Image (cartoon, rainbow, N blue to C red; front, side):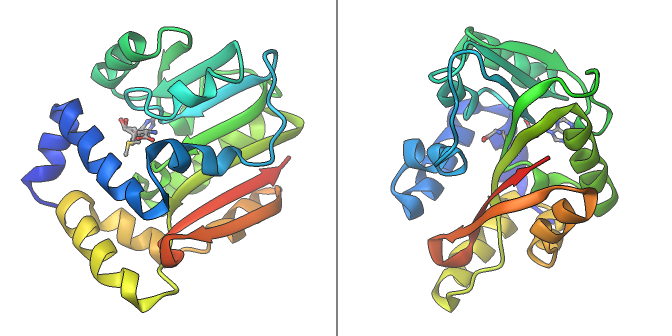
Length: 207
Ligand SMILES: C[S@@+](CC[C@H](N)C(=O)[O-])C[C@H]1O[C@@H](n2cnc3c(N)ncnc32)[C@H](O)[C@@H]1O
């Protein structure tokens, strides 16, 4: 379940960004939040990057600081129009992440930020398979998303957030071994780090 705030936050970008900004305080702010999945990766101007479920370009804006070859993919045309305005340095593709319209072995880095929790388990698996397919051998999948808190003090805040803004799929992700799913598809997970009392996870995995 979710409340009207979820609908409103997707309707009004300023509301989405304000909520994300407040939530990101738990890890030191929005800029740090978006750097977390990129930490330790070698990204240069020629690195071919795909930002899956890019929304209005919230994370894309950081990816274009490293690479001149960034593509954002999202199913929402409205979000893509906003992304095009907010981060014109990237290219954008309107598509389902589980049906990516790219050839095999195209990207060096596939990134996704707080989006997999919106997927039903079967769709989530399909997206990870697609990410594997479109990555070059040796390419990296990097993501940040929710995780079941390991520190009990973080449960009330996360529960309130999920209740206000998220649906059943976010609660399902808390019960999912996401790194395990990624490994089952064939990736080698080389980083799995928890933040904000365990309520956020960063995964980096190599094809
Ligand atoms: C919570 S937003 C995350 C946006 C952005 N990555 C960020 O860091 O704030 C989730 C995004 O996933 C997109 N989305 C949801 N299901 C999708 C799917 N099956 N394929 C592609 N995009 C999808 C939504 O349109 C939305 O823009």
